[in-house]
Image (cartoon, rainbow, N blue to C red; front, side, top):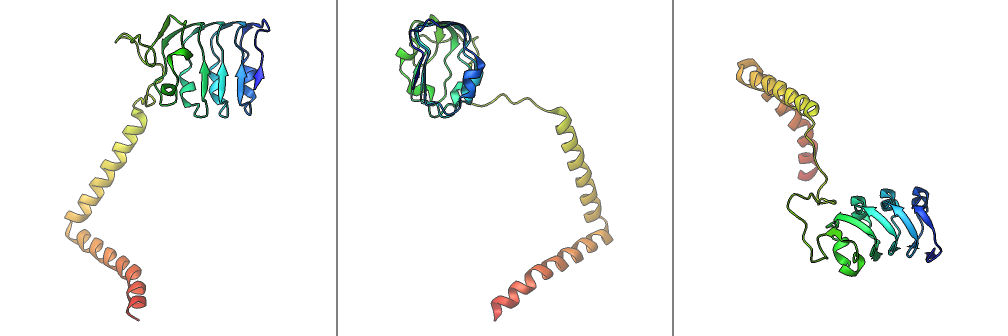
Length: 183
C-alpha cells in the first residue's frame, strides 16, 4: 500500500494518480487536500483500500466510485463531503465510520436520511434518455415492413407466392435432416 500519510500534501488530488491502475491501496489521510475526489479514481479497478480521511475535500462522492468492486476498505471521514452516499451494493458494505465527520452526507449507512428533493448520486440504473431520432427510424421501418407483409398476404397471388417460398425453404432445410434421421 502506498502511504502519503501525514506528509502535509496540499492542493487538489491530481488526476494523474488515477493512472496508477495496478495500485491495491492508497492512503492520503491527514493531509491538506482540497477540491473534489477525482471521478477518474473509479478507473482504478484493482484498488482494494482507499483512505482520504482528515483532509479538506468537498463536493459529492463521485457516482462512478460505486462500480469499484474490489474496494474493501474505504475511509472518507472528516472531510467536507456532501450529498447522498452512493447506494450500490459495494458501498452498502462500508460502515458509517467510513463517512463520519462529513456533515453534508446522507443516506445509508449513516442514520441521516436524504431529503426527498435530493437525487441520488449513484442511481441503480443509468439514466435513459429517449432517442427520438432512433425511435422514429425504428417506427418507420416497422410500419413499412408491416404494410409490405400485410399487402402481400392479403393479395391472392402474394399469398400463394409467400406459401410457395416458405414451403420451398422448409423443404430445403428439413429434407436433409429428415433423410439423415430416417436412415
